[in-house]
Image (cartoon, rainbow, N blue to C red; front, side):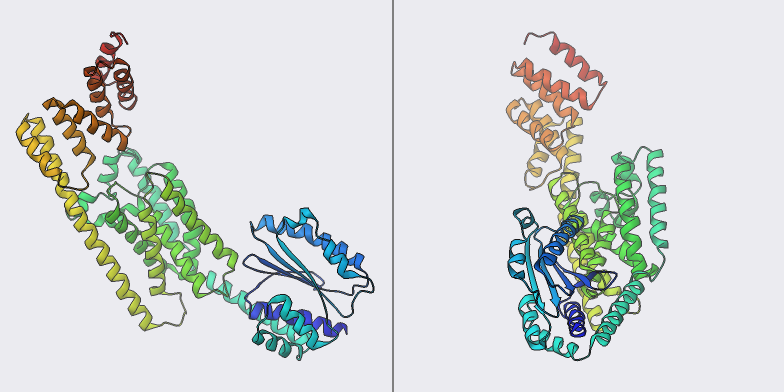
Length: 511
């Protein structure tokens, strides 16, 4: 009878692994107990000779402690656990009452827990119980019957062979190459950071533009290499440190899977698509390896979809969580170029499907179709970006002409240029500032103040705007407000003599 029970134990585990896609996460040293996981569901199978309910109670309490630890370590929220005892004969006392009363209010916080006892002395009855307990389909139960007909040794051997083959396949997949390209890019972005720091600073906009950061007006003028160079530039040490850490862990693993040449394609292409989408959606100066790193995440997604039986679900859930968390942070915090992240993620996923994993059976038709789709997306994004930036570039040129007209005290030309700028849905911030200065000269103080306020709402550290707001507040006889504005001007431009002179004048005035 014990042999029948043992065969049933291994057969149920085999069906859960082969057909229900459960991951075998623990087998006790004496092989009397196994834990399996699928998404938020835990299945515990235990084979034993249980004669009394008290033995069940003690084992259930012990299982709760281990389940608490497992839930905490794996950050499971809506846990469901099926705790199954497989016995040759039923306990002699009222074990059902023991199983029903074992779950305390405290233990209910663990999640939805079911305790089941399956008596294996009658094959068909135990098969039907398994169908009900584990939600097996008719095909699953047919497979279970087949396994039960083989005997314990054969079923255990088949399961062990399957798990060994899967582990070998996983190791082969995850360790194809050495991450030389990853280390090269880590060194390169470190060297470029030092170069930026020695030539004006990595947070200096002019320095970033000089050394290749994404700057839309220059890309429109023909500097297409700026789709590539931002990948190795970083804005500040924290930006460099975070991306280097991510590249070291994520990039290295992707390179081990795809090999050096394929990884280089994935990294550069996703970096370019990240910059491209940023170019199309964002006017700001931008730099960083984030798009390329998100491309590595995209490649990981492809692996998780293609090789679901090799990578554990917990690994893929962690990847999905990291992607979602980073995109969520990017959407909620200003200054983070989320379009670059999304462009890199999409590019990495697509190029990973095109280059595919070494030794993978190549589907030429699919690769051609994906290549056409990818090229179409790149061209479409480029056309949209250049068309959008073309109008933006025109607005920038008009803004510079407005600056020149005001410098030459040509008020009439300035007003004509301002009229042309009003036709653009999105104007450069400098245009609002120059128009405010123009209206200040013209004596339209209300309009000027409104425009200066718009400038500081968009760019808080725009010191000249605060200076003129202070002057306008004095015109309104609001000394307190004038004092507050000039303090902000000096906060963002310390030591400015013109600002300090105005502050001294304001301090002499009564509030």
